Amino acid sequence: MSHHGTGGATELPPLTAGPHRRRIGLISIVACFGGLLFGYDTGVANGAEGPMAQELGLDLVQLGVVISSLVFAAAAGALICGPISDAVGRRTTIIMLAVLFFTGTLLVIFSPAGPEPGTFSPLGFGVLVSGRIMLGIAVGGASIVVPVYLAELAPYEIRGSITGRNELAIVSGQLAAFVMNAIIGTLLGDHVDGVWRIMFAMCALPAVALFFGMLRMPESPRWLVEKGRTDAALAVLRTVRPADRAEAELHDVERIAREQDQMKAAGQHTGLRGLLSNKWLIRIVLVGIGVSMMQQLTGINSIMYYGTRVLEQSGMSSDQAILANIAFGVVAVLGGIIALRNMDRLNRRTTFLIGLTLTTICHCLVGLASILLPEGNPMRPIVILVLVVAFVMSMQTFLNIAVWVWLAEIFPLHMRGLGIGISVLFGWSTNGVLALFFPSLVAGIGLTGSFFLFAGIGVLALIFVATQVPETRGRTLEALEDDVSTGAIYTVPTGASK
Image (cartoon, rainbow, N blue to C red; front, side, top):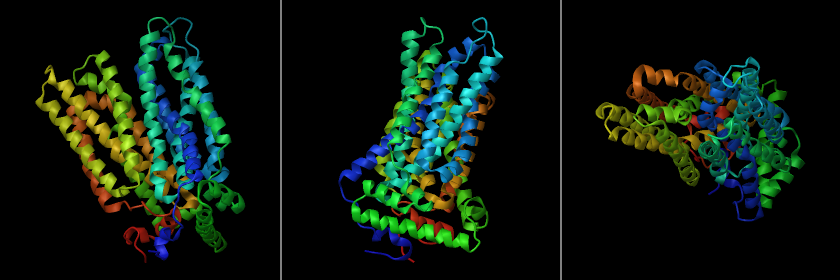
């Protein structure tokens, strides 16, 4: 059973039941408040944008700036917070992000309106955009630091489902935002001014929970070893592993840390210089960028941000579209739950290939439906709603969670924050460009053209995954690190020994 070399994973003592399983569960719940905030802050604008634009007198361009400023700031946040978490620790970075979430929310809620309702106030606009930028940096930071923190704490056997909880928290946050917006809008919309401020104020609660929760959580043991604090790392591992397993795992992590020290001593570099001096690391970062962009180029976030607009294009009234929009949130959460059940059973590559095949088929069908069912046909909005819901479901079941888990696993320890930061920078930038231009795209080439375009990109993404993306499931982060750094990961079948 035991392999040497790359299959080192199998030598670790088995994972048994016990209090350490509950402990890792608790840690993942607290850290996932970061994901919940990420989801809520990106979803809340879907219902708050209208009343906000009215009260603050924003035109369409200014509204676009307010919405997309969060996304572009998230791209920057992903890039900045990766190296910060490599320097000061994953836990410390998440605590700092909680403060940013809270402060950004306050700026948004208290951005002043103009002298008359509906008049534009440059100060109010400035404060609002500053708040959105703060939230964006926090969202981008949380999107990479939380999955890395969870991947480094979780045993490899259940790493997929533990790390994947963050993505489930994100879609739950989006659903919560859609539902809260519908409730607040229905109950208070006609009686209370500034109802959008109440929608945004809800974001403050999980930020407080994240801050106080993380104060009681441990630092990542792998980060501690890299900083030479092996006793602290062992103490943390003992709370989340059986005793013999904690010792064995620590030796694995220490071995990698020693190899890195030897590299430094021999004048080889780690971090960015180490990345640029190793062709295999450059290759894995390029593959990471591809995986991150492929996730966005399915158009999933265009639906999450502009779902109501797509449904109105298909022939729904605006009231019907706002209600139907909740369906996207619901199936996203259902898909996420199914995905977590499958994460540790299906290979990551298989999951990617199934997901891309299904999303591409859905795109083709939406395009066909909008040609075959002319506008004014009563079946048109229903068929398009069903197909778009099927698309969101396939995306969340097979692609979203798997992409974040894979990104948190694939990079070597000395550049993990940096590698995932660079990859996600490209993902967020793609997301931002789509958020900015999707309304114009639909206006220009219609629903038909837009969805056929997404389908074409889906075919290219399938070829990319089949030829370039290595498998990570069922192996320790240390075994993966060896194979990624030497390029063996492209030649050795998973789990095989050299």
